Structure formats: C-alpha cells, structure tokens
Length: 204
Image 1 (tube, rainbow, N blue to C red):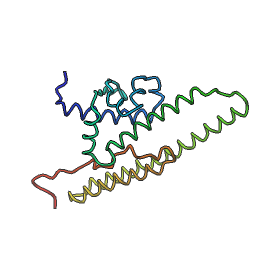
Image 2: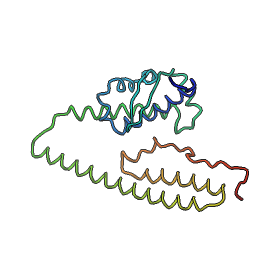
Image 3: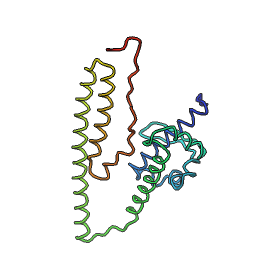
Image 4: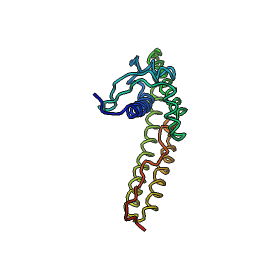
C-alpha cells in the first residue's frame, strides 16, 4: 500500500503522464500495439482516465485516474514549458507518432529496383541525419564538461547560480541546432534544474 498522500499521488501521476507522452513520442513502435495507451491518447478526457502500471527502461511507473479539472488546476501552477497546453501538445504528438508508425507498417513494400533504390536513398539520408545529430550531441557533451569544470571552480554562490542557468540555456540552444525532427526541444524544461541553497555561511 502506498504511503504517499493524495496530493503526492496526483503529482506522481502527472509526472508519469509527461514521461509516458515523451516516451511514446520518441519510440512509437514500442506502443503501437498498446491498446490502452493508444486509446488514452485520443482525447484529454481519455488521458485523464488512464489507469495503468508500466515501465520505461526497467523503471516501474504508475498512472492513476485524475479529473480533467484537477489536472488543469495543478498544471496552472507551472510555467509555460510545463502547463496544460504543453501536455496536450505532447499528447497529440504522441498520437501522431503512433499513427505515422502504424501507417508505415501497413504500407505495401514495393520490390521493384526503383523502389529499392528509393529505400536505400532514404536509409542513407537517415544515417546522414543521425550522424549530424551525433555531432551535435558530442558538441553538447564537450560544452557540458567545460561548463561543469567552470561551475565547480566558482566560489561565489550568486555567480555560480548564474553560470548554472547559463549552462542549461546554452545546452538547450545547442540541441535546437539538430536537424528536424530532432530539433524539437519543447519536451525539455526551461526551469532551473539546479538551484543553489545558501547556508548560514554564504560565500561573498
């Protein structure tokens, strides 16, 4: 039996809804046959009625039903990057990704020489795109490494927090340089992920 309060259970479900939508949008093939999840994506009300236990990369997660009004009210406390409009955008993106994946599976595969050459061209294009994405990620990791070194060497609490915020924004901008559709950074939170907490002996 869960030891979480009702509010904590609601917050947990909302967080897991976000995680599920992001996961479905990025890996629709893993959910194309998950009827309960696919049906939940069809409307706001259906998503709120979702009652499911699932896993993402071996982590067990739970979503319990929540009223649409409660969901809207709770998300109204968040910023624009994590409000109800953003969640609904993720829902529609996830549903669209599953439909596109399903249509691609249903489409007849032509075996003509021309069709095979087209498929080879598409695969080469995909490889080139992934190479470009990989280069951006390598660049982002190197910048993260340098930023972490700089932040760790910063003695001033105020300046350290500023550099943390600058580093987060810089990484999000770099990831936005990816070729479409990998340039969509709307699923990334613009909030301050790292917040320094001052103690009685603040640095000056």
